[in-house]
Image 1 (cartoon, rainbow, N blue to C red):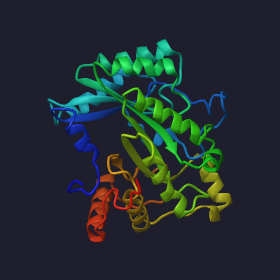
Image 2 (spheres, helix red, strand yellow):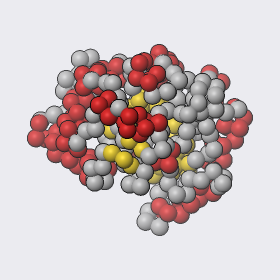
Image 3 (tube, one colour):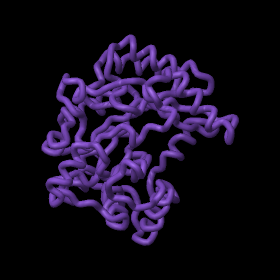
Image 4 (cartoon, rainbow, N blue to C red):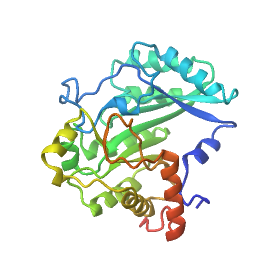
Length: 307
């Protein structure tokens, strides 16, 4: 247990890099199989990619141009910083293999870029691409982040994910078996899930060979199908107050396997797109509240982990 009472992402990076490292998000023009008709249309019901794409992440710019702009922004304050190219928008392993390789190699050719973080879906990691990542990991840092969102099949169907929990477990196990760190994204507060079911996600994820985990609160975003569902059936949703969600997160982390790196507890969407909940807190402010509450409760990651 660290002084932070959970395994922290900044400590994870410090153990792997000699100096300061910064992620730079990239929109490389990918789509998703539940958007283009391969598995469905419309995408996930909660999703509006504008909520996490910085201004420089525009598809009219090449991978190199986006990285160069990101580097210029961060290098003003930290000239010696190194960078991880974060393929964040949509499904960043969904495409023709040689075209995917070209985009990844373009990112790695940029000065200062020392690795890749690839955001994708569990059903979009073919064996031949995983073999390429194994070879790539011999010369740079690689982390594959899978959008898990829920471990319940009924929820995955309701939010139009287009894949099953079995696909999630298979992708994470194959990635870890190949020697590549696997991460997961999980949303707490999805409609139809009880508090006990949300906490059980921690048990399921703890049984998998995960390296990192990002937690996100459910946010209702303008222009999404879920926002329309909330208008029509608000009783199906419980929108947490900040204090309620802090206690939920701590209960979750107490059940989480100690070795899993917790990268974040919360996400923050642009105010002009966010319908609810609007807590008026920056990510670092929320994280500090979690840390203080963990101290008050004498809570720590894995305190109630069953093994």
